[in-house]
Amino acid sequence: ERGAEAVRVGAQDYLFRDELDARLLGRAVRYAVERKRADIAQRKLTESRIRAQENARLERGLLPTPLLDGSPLRFAARYRPGRSRALLGGDFYDTVRTPDGTVHAMIGDVCGHGPDEAALGVELRIAWRALTFAGLCGDELLSTLQQVLEHERADEEIFATLCTVDISPDGRRAGLCLAGHPSPLIASPGRPATLLPYENSGPALGLLPKARWPRMQVELGASWSLMLYTDGLIEGRIGQGNQRLGQEGMVELIRRRRADGLGGEELLEAAMNEVRDLNGGDLTDDVAVLLLDR
Image (tube, rainbow, N blue to C red; front, side, top):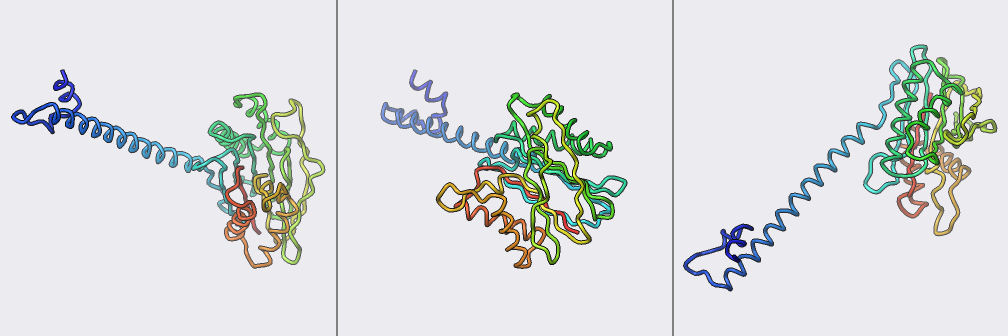
């Protein structure tokens, strides 16, 4: 019986009939078992790597590609999910130009972390793009997005914050809607970075069934930089204590970096790296930042 079991698990490679005894048979069985374990471990490792590569390709494919053909605006974005080894988190953003020349941008944050939140964020982004091209804007668009969230969320306690901006074809004015989301930052030549007004913001999507989101008109000027971000950028800690960076700290950080001559991709990369360093390491929350320049 021992010989048959040894042959079954692969010990035949080690058996010599003329020299077979209990000691050699036991050693052959041990070798065969270890080889089998190694083969199984290698196969599982290979399968795990293939799944990881497939997931990475999928998540990269779910990140947005801005549709700004024909627009003079410059676009830059950075995204860092809070989940370990993930490419996609609960934050989401997008930018498109509609046929009338208006540039629409949005950024949002689904509460929580994980694949379910990431999937809901992607659904909201895709819905926003479709509704924007269908001509919806402001309160009508956000009300429809709330219906999408209520239908797709796994739990009634899940909500999402959102900031939408629609920039006029001449680039000098914009409409702003805030759904429980931090206000964008604007900077222009000769003027320090500052937050756009946000007194009339509405609640996050999914909190109040009949909520309304007023659209505020904002004057941008001839030349400007507009930065949209999620709260992961401002909730990082400063040093070893419990103090957070906050919006004021973020504004000062951007002012300093702009004074150093940074802009576009370099500005976003430097800002996110500094926030991470101030936090003493990687941030636990997802972070998305979007920058439009004119």
